[in-house]
Image 1 (cartoon, one colour):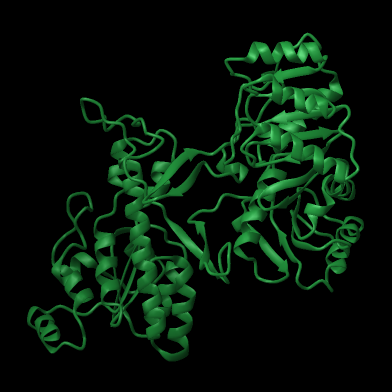
Image 2 (spheres, rainbow, N blue to C red):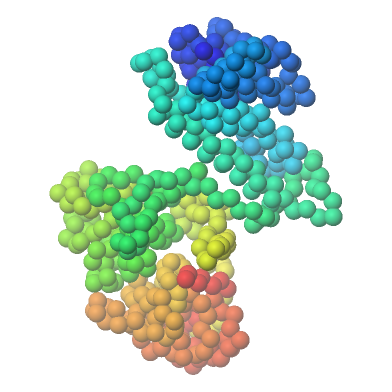
Amino acid sequence: MNALLSVSDKTGIVDLARALHAQGVKLLSTGGTAKLLADNGLPVTEVAEMTGFPEMLDGRVKTLHPRVHGGLLARRDVPAHMAALAEHGIGTIDFLVVNLYPFEATVAKAGCTLEDAIENIDIGGPAMVRSAAKNWKDLAVLTDAAQYATVIAELQAGGQVSRKTKFGLAVAAFNRISQYDGAISDFLSAVQVGDDAPADAAAPTLDLFPGQSNGRFVKVQDLRYGENSHQSAALYRDLYPAPGSLVTAKQLQGKELSYNNIADADAAWECVKSFDTPACVIVKHANPCGVAIGANALEVYSKAFQTDPTSAFGGIIALNCELDEAAAQQISKQFVEVLMAPGFTAGALEVFKSKVNVRILQIDLPAPLGASRSGVAAWDQGRNAIDMKRIGSGILLQTADNHVLQRADLKVVTKLQPTAQQLDDLMFAWTVAQYVKSNAIVFCKDGMTMGVGAGQMSRLDSARIASIKAAHANLSLQGTAVASDAFFPFRDGLDVVIDHGATCVIQPGGSMRDQEVIAAADERGVVMVFSGVRHFRH
């Protein structure tokens, strides 16, 4: 038997080669891989010696040869194939170990030139991988160092790789080629081309949205059903998940997550990550129904729950601080579907030990948190760079709404100036409103939501709903701060929130009737500030 090893990433390759050699497998290799194996005392034959043709064109041509592809593609169960190999003196290749030139890593580097990108497009590697994967019944193709241990274990146990493992390796190989080709397409179709082709020696200008979008996601698990029981569903993740994103969660206990659990949990987690002080977010049907900041887990949960205890029943709870036993005792009094935090004390986990159905997720937070993330890339914050929405036979892509409002961005437009406390409440309300479905109206005071109105066709109705919820929770809206995710097109929207007790308002501004609304605020004796940013969330 023969094994051809040609890897860019040398991780674990020596141990694999030793295991193959111990099974009597002849080692064939190329360039740097061959040198590494020889330096480690392993007998290895250069591919050039096997093909009788030297590497050429700076290594561009070395494995594109009938002796290589004949050895990979020949079916052992077809006599004519084996006769052809014998006629031409071609040996079979029974193991192919290949990982590709690092194209993805190359183009991820700042200032990557078109020439560097092109030179890191592997040709021979993908060709060999496709040949080997197509002929999976007769050979094992390894494209990732993580696969080596399984193959070594099977060789040591029985002297061969199982049919099941070989098929799984072949599927992984085709997936890897798809990912690789997709990355090349993403980069090259994003290169802006004017009257002339872009220069090789300069970093090209890239379009944010390439000419072809190649979504590549890996299935995490099948789900019992989708939003409703008659719908099928599955969870997929990015190839390279962002740190602190929901798909990186470790489930510590509880039932399997449902489609709705995951969707709501993501809404809660994205919101709670936006605060740089201890915070709690309770979500129901993808909308925050209670949000609060404070000194510790118990305080923030108690305040968040107080906003809307009715909606919190069976909700999703997310905290951006460690959950301790005191907070756990309080939370355990309510029916909770999912509980998330970056950490749990032993006492907190003990509290929920008997509540076996409660899904507990531990997610490491990206650092730093909240507004202090200014200048930090969205991916490093655990945020998506691009959002997508499926439509009929297409998708809408947009940059994700990752805007973080700074106090310096606020524009006070009324005669009355905000107090320090009002500024705190306005900033808090604005952060919450960003995660509430539009039209969104959020009443806040002293670091907690007092009333949340979401998802209405009329902003007036959102305000009324927020007041109704506050009344049901026995919360007064007097002296509250209000955030509106979009501007007030008429003064009636402002009047209704003031009528319910608001004394300061934050809104984007930008309406043709801004002056009318500002005049109304002055007339009613309230503070109003413009953020200059809209946060629609349909």
